[in-house]
Length: 112
Length: 113
Image (cartoon, rainbow over all chains, first blue to last red; front, side):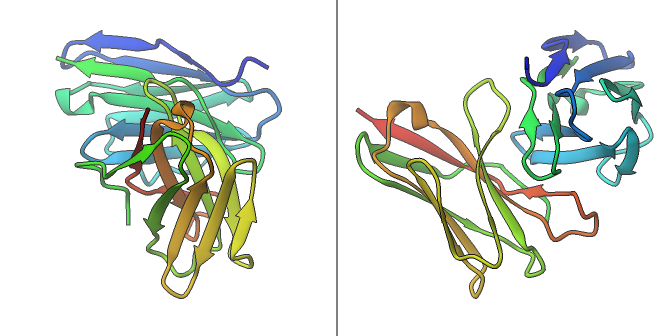
């Protein structure tokens, strides 16, 4: 298996633009997680899905953030409109058991 | 609480020596703990886990120790190698959402040749 795949790897955008991050989990994994990592706040869970259903979105910072999982092999995290404080590395992870999570390589987002 | 990482503590170890990375967890209700390793430019990677009904678990070159009395977790790496250079995170469950884990702030392990 190729592991968790994320795209793009790097994204630079201007404030106010819409940003869409994509994730393909490992085949057969029932859980999918979106995290954000910054120097100031460390690694934060934004939202997670189980069997394509959002279970806990309490970490989503505000209404500008939304996540979907239309099928078992694809998820998106969208920020609209983006702001400079959204600059971070965004990770997607998947797992069978929820705890032993396999992380993707991340998307480094820079909002200018 | 949530992870906060303004300045990562750093542990510097001589190559070949043993490393001990410590973590204080916050939630006494947590019953599952995990250690992750994050190399530069990569996502975190699962290393080893332990349930609260155990106080020690061993893997390949790694040992995790759990002291529930003082809410302390440690990761021991035997014969540290250059490839062990990374940031190490402990994580715990025990929060309202059953499948949710919370990551600690991390410790950077630096290897001296």
